[in-house]
Amino acid sequence: MEAILSRVQKPARYVGGEWGSVMKDKKEVDLRFAFCFPDTYEVAMSHLGSRILYGLLNDQKGIWCERVCAPWIDMEAELRAAGIPLYGLESGDPLCEFDIIAFTLQYELSFTNILNMLDLGGVPVLAKDRTELKHLVACGGPCAYNPEPLADFVDLFMIGDGEEIMLEFTDLYRKAKREGWSKQDFLIQAAQIEGMYVPSLYEVSYHDDGTIDRVTPTHGAPEMVQKRIVKDLDTMYYPESFVVPSTDIVFDRAMVELFRGCPRGCRFCQAGHTYRPLRTKSKEVLLRQAEAVLKNSGYEEISLSSLSTSDYGDLSGLTEGMLDYCEPRHISLSLPSLRADSFSAELMQRVQKTRKSGLTFACEAGTQRLRDVINKNIREEDVLHACEIAFQGGWNNVKLYFMIGLPTETTEDLDGIAEICKKVAYCWRVNTTNRARGVKITASASCFVPKPQTPFQWDAQDTLKQFREKQAHMKVIMKTKNVTYNWHDAETSVLEGVIARGDRRQGKAILLAWQRGCKMDGWDQCFDFERWMQAFADCGLDPDFYASRPRPLDEVFPWDHIGCGTRKEHLKHEWELSREAAVTPDCMQKCAGCGANALLKGGKCCV
Image (tube, rainbow, N blue to C red; front, side, top):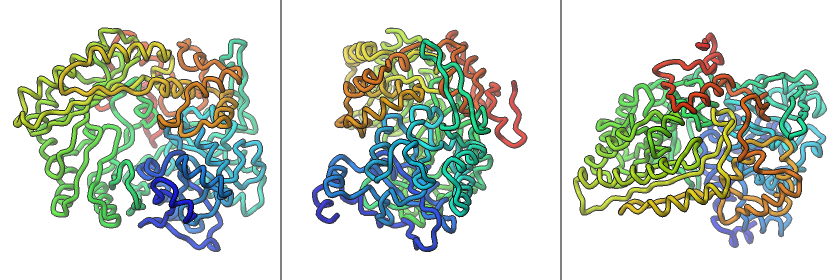
């Protein structure tokens, strides 16, 4: 290993031993749990959910949870050449020595990394080839709301909040291990845990046109697997310390989670629908957790994490309390996920007390009509007012996020993006307190992907040709001085759309793509679109069938038996409203009857 590490980039990714990492005596452990992140160390160590579950599992007597990250291509080549299997960062033991191998699914283009990590760790990639109880492969996270493309490889999926289901799962596994259960017996019992989906216990039949006829549970598995949620975030486990990385990572800071869920109901947003209902932590708990994490980790920056930070009820009081602790200690306070319609001079003044970094506003669309279609619920005036406040306060760095390819989009909507950027640049000229410093306005346009469990799951994604034509148009019209225009690679977005709405027949294409060298597909230098398209073709699958085909409102989706709390009838109604460009008020103003409140104890849904 010493020789290998001298030949690879960023060797600190692979050595472990960081401050805060957990070491245990293997003799006192009866469950070894590998928490795998199918991307690089820098991405893995920035993920808050992984940090929470790492602490939760290691807080249990008899369980040792270790971290396993995908090695970069240079390290993988060295490991394979030397015959060294992928290993846990804490013990250095091969992946094949762990009982449970769990992956978090954050991004569809990381799926080949799951296969690659299993193979590199000496574990069979196909679930049917893992016949013993050991090497049980589990997955959770956002992409688990359509688990079907990974059904060939994964033994079970945890749907919903991991903190709620994890210990019930590991307790059952420890019992099965003690009593010598077979893998099949364990899976049948695990399927009875609320929120646990075992794909091998479900049979899928298809119509002649390739659409799904029905999904039939077997061995007593439930017809609908409803997600599990943490009902009270104040009493939920939260670590008092984080593993502090020994090298730079993407988000190298402490974090506290304000709330789960989002009241806004943007129709394109999967997280906004799958994380419902809204559950909030109290200010007192947040202040206590923030102080503990900062004391135990030594971080010099802390971030308030949520889908929409400015929607926290007492953000003013919370930031005041945080700054009382942070300012004397020269700790920066970061407020990401701010909405333009909630940005105020008071909030700006608090943010800049410790650091004046760039501000980011997600406009999403260039015209009010299209913002109403997607239910964004912000106006151009909100964006310009927020920029006015920021520029008057001395900011000169603003990022604006947009999407292209949204349902019902026209050329006028694309032109509107350029118009907003032009108006923001003008806003700086008339409001800046120091014109000599200049301004940096960055407009980024991603390619829309219609995701499962959203109102737009019935819509077709733009084809690669359509995306490229729109990007070419944007390059022509984005000519305002001081505005930098960035666009997302359309090929990766198209593949993301194909897999996001895939069924379990895609497993053979994912396997073939990996066997032909596809991995680290989320990284431009590794992604090979043509190789992926050839894999689908060789498996007799049409990518357009999954991504760029509009779905009839009565079609059975591959994920219809996975419940996210939001009713399909509600999603369908929201899709119908989108065709009228009709806005649904956010949850704080009026309940839309989505059904998610029924997951709370005593919760009611206005249906």
